Length: 248
Image 1 (cartoon, rainbow, N blue to C red):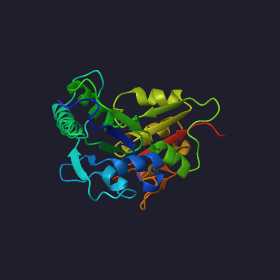
Image 2 (cartoon, rainbow, N blue to C red):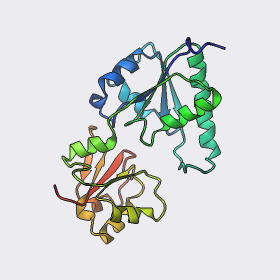
Image 3 (cartoon, helix red, strand yellow):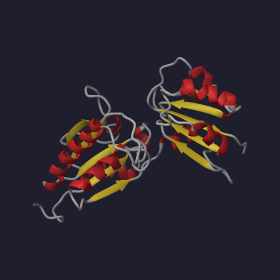
């Protein structure tokens, strides 16, 4: 077995919300240096958004670029995960480990920041189950919520604000309690949830305090200052809802 000293390094690289210009200098440098890219994609016949965004700043010629499917299914921590999802993590981990053991550095570009609802840490956890010691470096990235906040010139949190960040998988009754309890709420990846969210915002008198940003920073970006306009629309996966109760 290859020694730890010879083993390559896995880089979990946050590449920001979608605009290649929002990639950090460190992210670009690491991606330029890595010889192998493992890009996550949602559909078997689709393409990796992360790889496409990275290609806006990094020349991929001469690199080994693999796009692996990670099924978009709900993950509930502390429960048994969907077998298809687990199988995808394991397949990706074995591929990554094979390159690391050859001494190759592997970059895993991920949208936004690796620490926030990213596939990157599921991959790392699976790798660590296969091998006790993995050389890994996490490169933080600009989050979608930060980019959306900047785009609409609205803070996420100020002063004594208490902020809640809610992922797409909010299928229980906690959402109403969260909206009632927190000063500001960020709802991520709401593209399939607005039929439920808008009536709840109306019930709580928060429609006027909400704004939805779709494909923030991209050429076809759209901002909904009246979130009722999203009803009946097929929103893109990159859709973030900002709700802020207090005036500055």
